[in-house]
Amino acid sequence: VKARNKSDALLSEGTIKARCIVEPQRRIIGEILFTSQPIAFLQGVDPETGVVSDKKHELYGKPFSGKILVFPNAIGSSVGAYVIYRLKKNHVGPKAMINQNSDIITASGCAISRIPLFDLADSDLGRLREMKYVELLKTGAIRSLAGTENI
Amino acid sequence: LYLTKSEEKAVSGEHGRAVELAYRVLLAIGRLSNAEKLIPIKWAHVSGVSFLTIGDYGLDFLQSISKEKSAKFRVFTTVNPCGMDIENWDRLNIPADYAEKQLKIIGAYEKLGIASSFTCIPFESYKVPVRETHVSWAESSAAIYANSILDLRTNRESAVSALASALTGKTVYSDLHIDENRRPTMAIKVDLGRAIKGSVDYGILGYFAGKCTKGVIQFRGIPSTNGIDESKALCAALGTVGSTGMFTIGNSSNNLETIDFSKKDYEETFENISDSEKGEAVVFGCPQMTIEELYRLSKAVGDKKFKRKCVVFCSSKIYELAKTRGYAEAIEHAGAVFVRDSCADFTPLISSLKVDSVTTDSVKGAHYMKSVHGVKVALKNVESIIEENTA
Image (cartoon, rainbow over the protein chains, first blue to last red):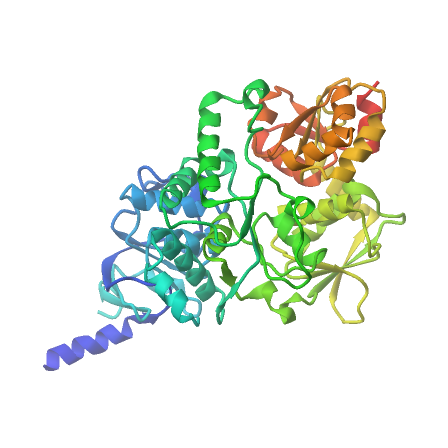
């Protein structure tokens, strides 16, 4: 019991409160794919392979599939929403997305693709950089599971 | 975000998957903007019609939505121009594989239920509702026009959000739907040392203002009533750069942060857009031509003939009207070619003209034709274009 309490306390230190923009059906556990750079879905992402295709982007060549994609916001054409849909349809999309200041492109794209989307608004996206695995809850809580500075 | 009982049922899928997805889009945007509720709208204007903009990805989604029996547009819905003249595409050098996909997009929209014209100036062809009516318009130039000239209430919607509004008859009650958000937050003081006049002047002003402001803009030092062509040019250029969804004209006593628009600003903005002295072809109609503009064009050409290729973009509805009044015949007699229901910027037609430069009176057109088709652009007012390109 003691051990469990301790681990709960550690977990709560590693919890970030977010807003659910597109809520998950159930809790989601996944590995973080982090970038501090915005993503242009149209022309910056290959929806057939599910990787960032822009060579100048720090996520260049890294697959989204099965990951929780963390980026500040989308930029570029609003057709980007349809690219997110295509990613999902091709089974190469991320499990969920977390933004700093989410936008209409990402929000509408995730909504039509049923990809859960969280928005941090108040806390710093950088806190997620050091986290490896996280759990996303329907309440909007993001909990670090391992590999954070707290554990 | 508060949902009514029937909205909640729709979100849970009671009215089919398409309506459910549409509500999910509105919910997501509502949460993003901290909106309190959804409100009914009278008119949706949907963008994302040209295959050149939405591509296979958009086509894919539209087909999956329109396949559903229960998916129908629930309010009056107009759509943006598509990427070719629907009836004359083969005579206008549009590749067959492109045309096939474009026709599939149109088929999907038609199945959902749209007004007949493909137009970026829907207010020209269809009856505008009374002031303060809530609508949901994508196409930035039309949304800005709706708020600023027609006194309708709309945000600058995206292709997907306006589609969601069409499928549900609702929009998110936020931003420019709320009266207190419709007050100017910034002013632009226009002083060119001469009168501001015509689509080029107003386009340059819009391009300058869009780049240096956000929020509702108050223009000072310009006439309170403008020609429809001038307002259209201002709205289109504003929407091309920047995020503003509305402007006012006037001189309220409010202490607004004010930016000057001088002769020097005008010249710098002009040179930034117009990078050629002459164009090898003439393009009219970005946004599409109104009946009044076609009338004036027909008078301006008179008995003269175009020395270079000239293409004129307007909706099929306006074309039919222009035909009954004789304007279309006069313009065609001068050698110009009408392209109906298409967008001047997002059609392969411009590339297929095989020219390195075009002349146009549209700042928005100049911006997109340069970036989409890689041509150089000579920006000139309609009178000079006619003078230099006809004989």
